[in-house]
Image (cartoon, rainbow, N blue to C red; front, side, top):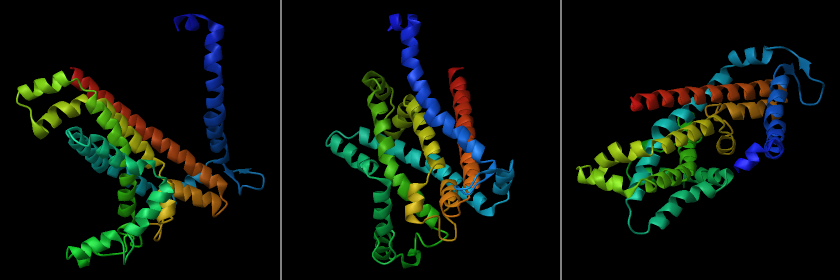
Length: 295
């Protein structure tokens, strides 16, 4: 390998093809999107340059702010509910001595289903009359809680968040489990000898040791939350009354329902900027925390 690095020709042969592909399929489309975001374009006629009008339109567009707020809900749900549940289940499963593979496959199973399949399955779960959720509530004597989960503006977003969490939690659990099983047994045994057992051992020993993987899971959850699209389109199409709209579905509708490709490209650039800003803030916070731990 060192001989390849010293040979400039061989080094360039390895580096240039992926750089060309990266530029062709990522950088160039991004700049084209930025270019179209400053135009008035219906996707057919020649684009007309309009400067920052599309971005100004987004700032004064009430439905866009609702969509942005729902993306924030996605992020908060991922960080404060989904990730703690992932860690909790991972620690529980890591302590299982029998049928471990069965539990790992069971929790991972939803992740291999397509989003369309998951959305259709959960539409049946939320079905008003025969759906599992309402049937359970009736069985528990909680008839007052029965409602149109996907048809009620107050619950449609929560129903989607739970569905999205159900689909991807298993994937992240497998990552966290791999990190837990990679912890040297001697360290865990030493912790047990020092009196750390149960959840005290998990909180003060296991979780700090798997922190790098937890950070990766958090980052993947945040970026996934910012680009949520298909599950919302299939389950509610952003309804009712736009209550479950997210930025990606709003962008999709502007492009393919209203043929306003200029505005849709502006929204896509805003999504990219928000994702980059949140990722940067998260990166800075983790660096500050890592620096504090090293002191």
